[in-house]
Length: 227
Image 1: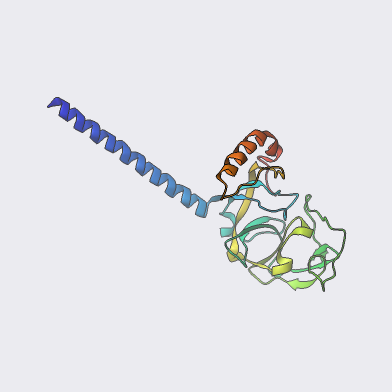
Image 2: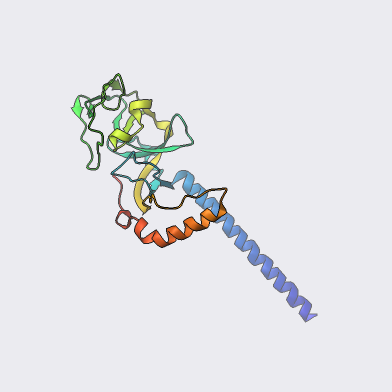
């Protein structure tokens, strides 16, 4: 009889532990989803449009609270849904806000008639200047930004698809503000390509990256505050 009681108690205890573990897991997932939706979210920079402020392969942690209470200010970097395809996230710098007028003359950006003060890492890679008839990249006629909208540009000015091409950004698309870089992974042209049809390529890629890990991580960028 004692043996049966002990067995029942043991099973009951095991069920209690399993239930407790399951409940804790559910709560952890729920809290993580809430934080991701309303507080913080991780992002990866996929392109060079914000070089040299942000590099392809930078992993960012962004907060999603600030712009619920105020609009972005000039010079701030924002993360937003690409208006023409909201499934994609873009990262750009706010150049002008509602009510301001923007124009570009020979690559120089003017806001309300004054040259925009470029942040330190803004760069131009193409020495050629395109006329406005060919592209708004280097020369753009004056545009007054409507209320509730923002003119955004990438810091890599000659290689950024931004408000010069698709117009001012509506605030409803803004998701957050990047805070700092928590990891940075440099591209390696020699790295083996991964193919879904070739399972061995996954193994090859894993061991290649494992061996080259110390050299591919941009250690000096980790922890860098974004501004």
